[in-house]
Image 1 (tube, rainbow, N blue to C red):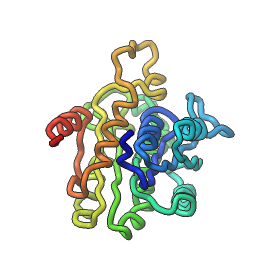
Image 2 (cartoon, helix red, strand yellow):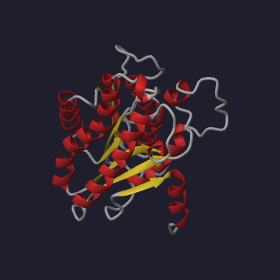
Image 3 (tube, rainbow, N blue to C red):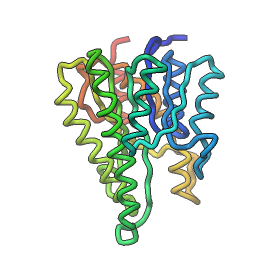
Image 4 (cartoon, rainbow, N blue to C red):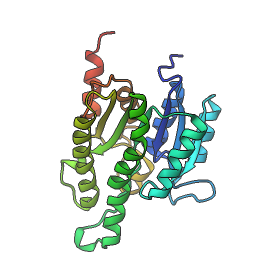
Amino acid sequence: MERPFAGKVAVVTGASRGIGRATAIALAEAGAKVVLAARSTSQSPGKLPGTIDETARQIEAIGGVALAVPTDVSRDDEVEALVERTLREMGQVDILVNNAAINYPYLLVETPMRRWDLVLNVNLRGTVLCTKAFLPYLLERRQGTIINLSSYLAVVPFPRTLAYSVSKIAIEKFTEGLGKELAGTGVSVNCLRIEVNIATEGWTYLNPNVDTSSWEKPEVAAEAILWLAAQPPSFNGRIVTIEEVRNLRAQAPS
C-alpha cells in the first residue's frame, strides 16, 4: 500500500466522528501518525455517537499510530496542552486539519447570545487558536500545511444557520489572509469548502426525517483533505470545493 505521509505527524480536530474521524483514519492509512483532538471521550462522551478513543482504536487496529488528546479548541489552555503533548509524544507536527465545528439551528431572534458565541468560539476561534498555536513549529521547520474546513453555507443563505454561516465565511477569509502571510515560508494554508451533503452524525442529527440515502460519505471529504495535504507550498491561500479537487486531481499528470 502506498504511504505518502509516512514519517509525518497530523493533528485533526473534531476527530471523534464524521469528517474528522474519516480524515484521521485516512491519514493513518497513508502512513501518518495522527493526533486526535475533540471533546468527546470514553470518559465524557457527547450526545452523538463517537469518541476520540474509538477513533484511536480504529487506527491502531489497522496498524497505525494515534494519540487521543481531549481538547476544547475554543480554550487557550487546552490548545496549549494539545500542542505540548503533540510535540512531546510525537516529536513534530506536519499537518493540521481544523475540522472541529458545531451548529445551533435556530433563527437569530431565538438564539441566545451564549449560543451564538459558542458557535463562533468553536468554529472560528478554534480554527484561529489552533493555527496560531501550531504555526510557530511549522515555520521553524519551514514546512507543513494547514487545512481549514468550510461549507457551502458560507456563501448560500439557509434558514437557521446564521451563526454557522458567519463562522465559515470568516474561516475562508482567514485562510486567504493567512495564505498571503505564509507565502514563501514553506508552510501553506488552504480551505476545503464542503459543497455537498455529507452523512455525518451531526448533519443527519440536524436534519431529521430527511432521506440521506443520496448523501456522500465522510470519506469523500477525507479524500479531498488528503489531496490538499499532499500539495506543494505554492498551493496556498486557496478555497476549493470537493468537485474542484476532483477536477484538479484529474488534470494532474499521472
